[in-house]
Image (tube, rainbow, N blue to C red):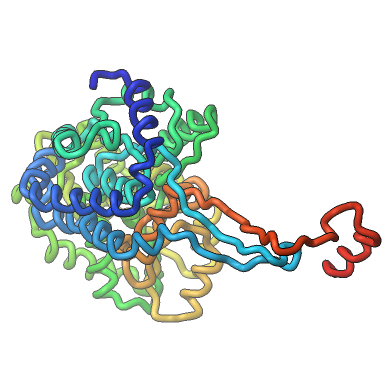
Length: 457
């Protein structure tokens, strides 16, 4: 393909205008083929994820392959219904008419995906783009080169380039692609790059979905089930070595239970990950030396309560808890995106709400509490993308819950029907009767204004 992206985009536009992708059966057949490709090449995908990030087979299947297969399965079950025009009510002013909403594809979609879940976060949006009837170009991350290579191989062998294509490369490839005119851009990644994407999209008035990140808080209230809270927090935080956009970024623990909870948390981490993850070699590695060094610099903040060991040669940092942390510390100035968990304490929930609301709206929030009033207060008083009560990260697993951010943590949401809707324009159509006409709409009707006011009032 070279780097003639303008030619590629044009060929996709020509293919889209043929109308093939609008046929629902064509979309279903494509998704069935995609599912078969994933299942057939599962071992190769796992090998690539192991090479890029040292992901275990369990993590690779649970968080990358399995979740995508479930997304395809759910989409196939509902696609015909989603794609149908749906009738809505007509108003008094349009008496005699019928009103419909027609979902239609945008056209050519650009999907730019990140390195932390390099398979899932490339293919899950693609499922939505296909389901909605679009052509698509995928730009996977250069930081996970083996997975990107496998994606390119699988797509190019099974789909015509004018329908679905994968473009490999670094920042220069992304920049060149953004100079082309797309009909929709879907980006998952950092806030900083999200701003660049949005600026580029603004030049051509291209609609975007931005799945970004931020510092997702996790609050452990005094009435929490400490054992379950510890297990679910440790899993949500340290899966993928903390390189998850919705991982708990920091803990706010109530003073009354802090000491007891942290003891349980340390025991749980040992239970889940063992005593020496560096020696065992089973822990997901940090994606690059640059990211590794950035994370290691945070270890000097506060006091290390647990963990802290790291090995540059293996790009591994063990699960770590640090306490005596203040908002002014470097670790609290940006999203951590690694296996380091800062802990702060509080006496009054109001101060937690106040401190979180002073900062950019987080992508996720987690609260552990048995009290319904406490749950309602947090949900009502803090704006965030989505989250869980008495769990972490698990809201991503439901196709019935659209996933996305708010404010600086993102624009738009997807998963399940949300993925279909993200890549669809809803075209509003009014079908008017010719059996009669309403005279009050015309300026020639006597006392027409008086009649209109009477109807409206």
